[in-house]
Image (cartoon, rainbow, N blue to C red; front, side):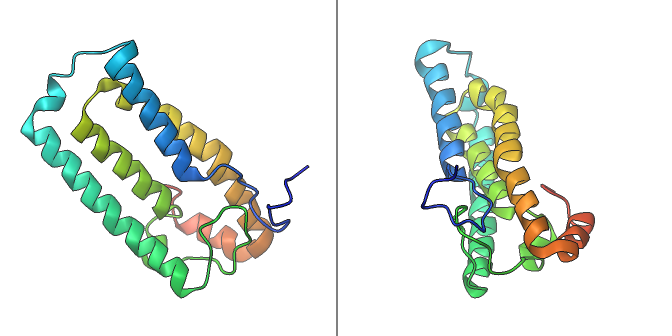
Length: 161
């Protein structure tokens, strides 16, 4: 049974997706700093820091673009509320999940800046969790809500990139 704060016409994703990124990032940080530290010499190079900064800038640009489009169309980024419209233009023409891709770029950027192999080791787990427990629920919901329009969009636009 769904909680009463979840709109019955919604993807029903209760855990805010950014929380998942933060949780995995913090787990990696704790593993690297205190529990099972791995050699972090690579992460101290300036080129890795520059790459991290570039990832963060790209993430910010992608996130601002995606959220701005949602605001213009009076849609919600809250995953327990229903979608008002299907986003298929702008950054949504490049990827069906620009916000999650932006969070992934931010995660990678911060990993480069903070340093630590555990961030990379846990990255596939993060992608799997987001894909299985967030994106697939949202895709099922969008297919139910928008039918053929969503199926056509899904056929022409990739999930990630």
